[in-house]
Image 1 (cartoon, rainbow, N blue to C red):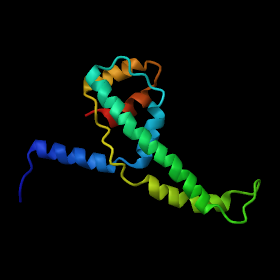
Image 2: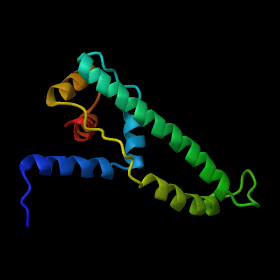
Image 3: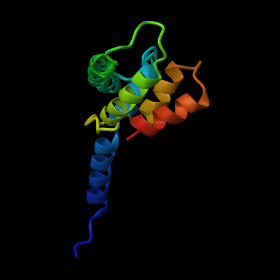
Image 4: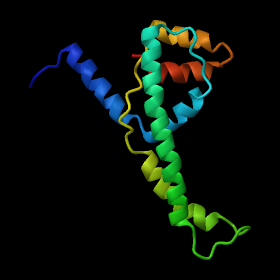
Amino acid sequence: MKIMKSTEIMKATEAMETISTTRNEIVSLFLMIREARNGKLSREALVKYVMLRVKMKSLFDEYEKVRQEISEQTKPDDWQEGDSSERWDKAFRPVMEKWLIEPSGIDTKIFTDEDCADFILSNPDKDGTYIDTLTHYFRI
C-alpha cells in the first residue's frame, strides 16, 4: 500500500472538490455574486475572478435554457392557464433536480486568503453568511 504525500493528498482533495461542486451550487453561487464588486482585488486575482465568472455565467445561461426546455417537455398536454401546477411540478422537479446535482466541472478555488479579504473589503455591505459562503467556495 502506497502512502500519499501531503501534496498528492491536496491535489486529490482539490480534484474531488471540483468534481463535487454541482451545477446547483454554481448557479446559486453565481446568483449570489452577480452584483458583487471587485475594486480591491489585485490584477492577478481579478483575472482569475473574471475567468471564473465567465464559466459560471455560461453554466447559468445553460441552466436557463435547460429549465425552459424541461418545463416545455413536462407540461401536461391538457394544462390551461389558471390550472393547478401540481401535476406539472411533479413531472418537472425530478428532471430538473437530476440535471442540477450533476458535477459542474468548474473549479471555484481561485483566491488566496489575501484575495478573499480583498474581495470581502470590496463588498462591505455583505453579511457573515455571504462571507462564509464566499470563503468556502473561493479560497484555495
